[in-house]
Amino acid sequence: MCWLARYRALRNALDATPRQVALYTVVYLAAGTCMNWTGRHFAIAAFAHWWQVVTCYGLYLVPVSLLVRGRTALEQYAAGVLALVPLELAGYALGSSIAYDGNVIDAVVGPRNFTLAMCVLFGVIPPLGNALVAAADQLLSSSARSRYPTPGSVRR
Image (cartoon, rainbow, N blue to C red; front, top):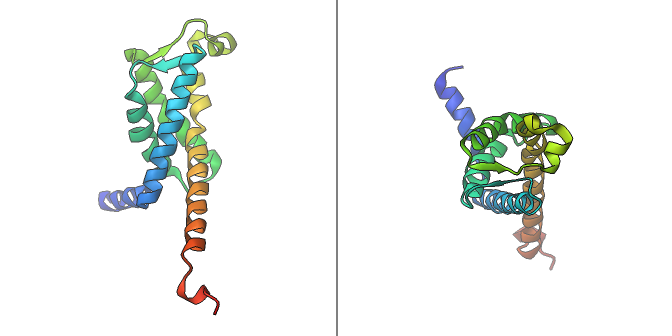
């Protein structure tokens, strides 16, 4: 496949309506904020800076999820795990992600397997995010149709 065909395929995979982009952004930023708060509150792991939720969830995981939507849940999960590997490795290596000593994940899998466990656990983000956004998009589409009937659907 030539580079132009690959570029077009990539562009088509990332194509989304403005409402879908807004839904992905809201869902992923909310999820990232909740997960960061939960990780910090229970002393598991957290970002060193608040803006990392925006870069990791909004600017990294949203495009990953867009690329794999329409695939099976297992394929989305596998892509999520693979996408998280460089993110998790770099974050913990650079210290921009903090794993708290003696956290519950360390207690279960050991400290040497913490990053692997995070990748495996959070690989569910793309399939869950895609399912949630698709459901919200469908709900908004059906509610918009019921509020604004099409010309042929109005009874006289």
